[in-house]
Length: 164
Length: 150
Image (cartoon, rainbow over all chains, first blue to last red; front, side, top):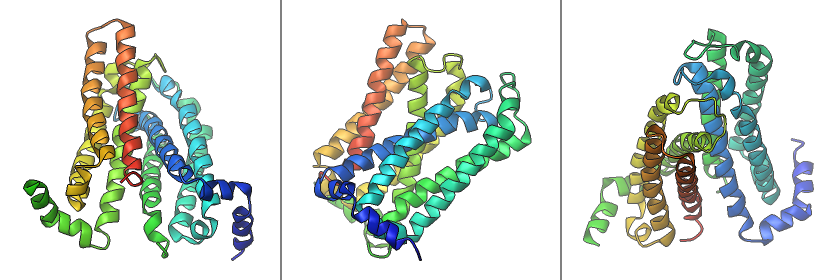
């Protein structure tokens, strides 16, 4: 595999030093990663919950205001996630759980693009209480299921690595 | 103390300490439940604080069913994790703070919904929402840090 030079490079950055030398950096980043996860999932519950008909009376157009919230929360988790990667690059990159997690996030990303370019325009015209089209419901369901699996596999990373 | 040890030595405690995959499975259930409860708490309080005003607060009610499902998952998974080392958790300040924050956060969530329903002054609604949000955030932060501040 060709990820070793990348891991080597991460290991030699000054930020690797920050992550391993300052003992509270890792727990701090973890805590922020949890808060980001909550904000991201909450925002998705509003948008996807409305589309799936769990909360059909929410105004669809106003629900879309939670999309930037989801993107900011994802940004927080991308940055804090990069911090973990700097701390221990060889173990993360070699961890099958980590590889699965990145693959699932890529799927969620493609799904989000499909949502934005394929469904968004039509959805904002929905009246309150009106059912979303079937295609949009499929996208919303994929979104929630994939993110739940991202959380699951993320929590399991310490156990899927093989070397503790 | 006897009751704590009885709980810790019970079947749930033995399961969580001795089964290879028991602990990780209960742990990820706790993470998914957390995301669900906290996700709804966060968006609802954001709405009460004035974000996305066009959304009617009563229309959020159905999302609360999802939040309750998450809460139930975390109550059950939490009780199992608690059985793992009951006698040390009980005396851990971080754990006590976590439980206190969640209980207070739950009560405040109810007060926030009541204030909205009864059309209490907006300032009162927002103040309650801020404190409610803070309580739940403390619950998550202390929950994460329990692993470090043992």
